[in-house]
Image 1 (cartoon, helix red, strand yellow):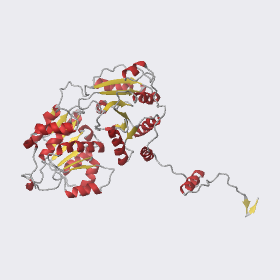
Image 2 (spheres, rainbow, N blue to C red; image 1 turned 90 degrees about the vertical axis):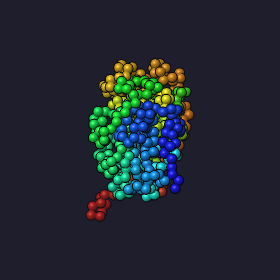
Image 3 (cartoon, one colour; image 1 turned 45 degrees about the horizontal axis):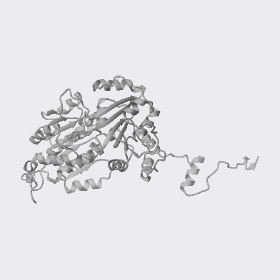
Image 4 (cartoon, one colour; image 1 turned 180 degrees about the vertical axis):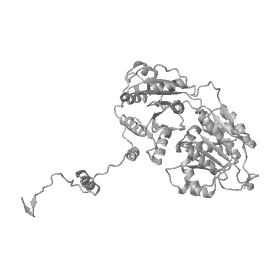
Length: 464
């Protein structure tokens, strides 16, 4: 087979420029210029940079260059040919798919075999690809462990490991799975951790799993974590008035796409339904949806068929969609890390964006902690409503706009099916009148049972 060219032979700067243009970047960012040469040398890396500054290519390009492909000089020396040589772990399915898409932009120069692995879909296609041979696996910990424990995925040949969104991956909820996965990989591996935030305890955990890592920080210690091009607004609002503000915001002329974050899955589903009822094209993405429904919602949002995506923190973590001009924290984030990751969905790749945060009265103390930790200028929050002139002026909402369209568009049939997937079925007691009516409906009987059943009291078989 013809030997594939490495990046050093092609010219890494040229490859990087072309790869960046494929994913919407005009020029290399500092984290890429700092991380790529060190990663190519084989050293372990802890990389920290603001969200939206191209961390995926910072670890992805060296991985593509390091894997040995059929036709390379040392390929015959591999102890486990056709088994994965590199593994990228992500906290969410959507982020795994996104990382795969970005690596594919540069992969045309190397033609490495990539496979995305996550739960919520069938095993057959993933197992079939593994049997055919794979060079790099990108996936979530749960499905990676399932395949590894069943013997379908052999991680013994993994000599390059990446943890994307490492602070989330090494959180106490993910740490046992990550440690089990690490134990199945080669002990002589290169490890890379990348994230926008890297607290002290997480740094200690990371160093315990790495060999003399190089800590790269794309900005100075005093640099803010948020993208400077993102304009931030914070308002104290009433919970019942928030949908009206969102409805008005959906009609701003500068709005491209908008992501709205909620705390719970139920809140995300309810808010998406509320916006659709108001006549706006909105979809939801959260853990209660099937994987097919999540992919459908994200696909509609990427294509622009839906202008608003309502998401929970876990489901929305790491989602990179071009054209997101507004991010709304419908409910106050839990901490400063969550705030940074939420508003990082806009203002990406040098574009400008708007981040809006709604604070309820009960969340005032929590917001003050976030404000102080990030050194933001929102010490005093102004009480605002959907009719407040200052809010309308800040968000460039036209005068006289209502939060509900006069003639809302009909709900798409697919979205109806998505909503039904979110609801829990109601089990009727077979002996109740509701149960008899439900059973008759399912059997196609149009005659509904009634509650006027005639009874006769008897004693020893004789009427009383």
